[in-house]
Image (tube, rainbow over all chains, first blue to last red; front, side, top):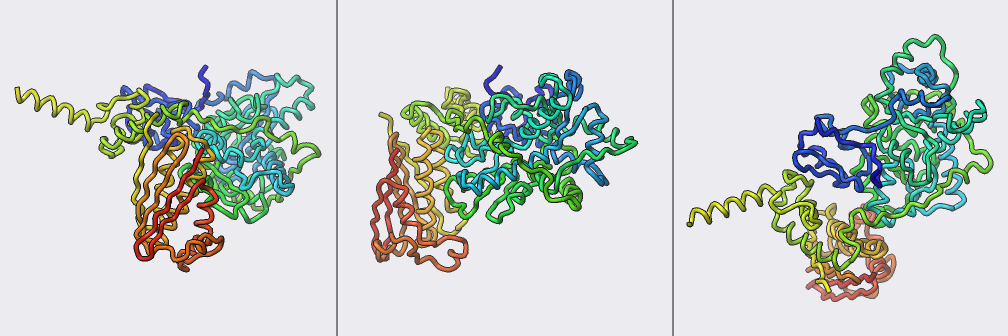
Length: 423
Length: 140
């Protein structure tokens, strides 16, 4: 197995080798070779932008298939709060939660409940001055991975707390084991996910050896069966136990609002996130204690595995929150310590570095500058690299050649033609 | 021993929003070289402050960067009004920035002090009415 697991995958049959994903990828992790896109796994952060942009639907997210829940004796669904924004005229989240039980889960535990615990834990850590300011939220796994490969100086600012999914999965598993008396391996906890980055995080977490979550089912995959079940409910069980604070995590700004302070910033959309991280790194952003970053526009409601337009979902979430109490979940003694990361976030220097040996890296860069200055600078993508500079880098790394550039090739052919004509 | 990597940037004095482009570009290259993260940060901060200064006070200029395995040498050169009292300009909080710039959150009088704080060497050559050359060195 490759060192890097990814949820985002390419369907080679559907890929026609166009440059849409190539140009969109925020970490320049895609190349087109021999007419097919290829993901450079070490650079991919699973943000899902390529899935969103591909007009041929050649990019997919691998996630757990709904039928896989049958492998467990007892199952618990842990739905992302963004799920609640996917339905028209929804009066109460209890309808969705009862629907999840109807489609085959034995129990449910909203991730929004754990979000309230994470918010309380963050407030406590800030109050006790245990975090490096400004604190960067660790809830969006695409952002955490981006920091890990591109922002070495910011790794220490990432909040060392489990994301709400992990907290929810651990509580759900513990409670199910206590309730049923079954061993933990017989209990399956499944996240109902709005995005591929969460699938990757569950599969290969940064912060612990193994996630308590056994799989993640895409919202879009479970949606048809779930809406059908919700339409045919005879009774609605009072299962919901989230306040407006937890549900608010579905949209950008929700997590920040739960800090109950005013020195925060919330940015969403991967380009905006990168801009904020660059400015943070250069210490241009001052006077802010907490930074919420979501790779998707609008926050988790913008995840590519949702079905509804993010802004419609956001409006619905606002509506659902209206009459809820602020927060229904509170930390027990010792719970905060159990939510702290087991592993530190360390910078992965190898990803963008040209060579371990700095003299060699410098030679490569000088060569790269020389090659790049001779390229047309159109960033057209025809060579299979996203920009002319990226092509120059690929050439120096021995992965491409100068005549992959069609303008260079044309000049070469012209040259040969001229020489032949002179014979 | 490999040669230094030499980079040249023109810093436009017309557009405030473009200040920081040169430091961003240098930062990206230092990361690709696998440079020490702390040195990268110091180069980025010092260079950004100096770029902003050039835009605010001198209507732009140019910037030469030489990257060596153990250090980065930066020259920021402008044809601005020059600095009448360098000692005073080095004091924290002293600023001659106009109000419109202060409204954007700049001009707090931390530019030169910050540059000094983040670099290992700093030298200013300035002549009234002719311009200013700022030489910076950041060592790994």
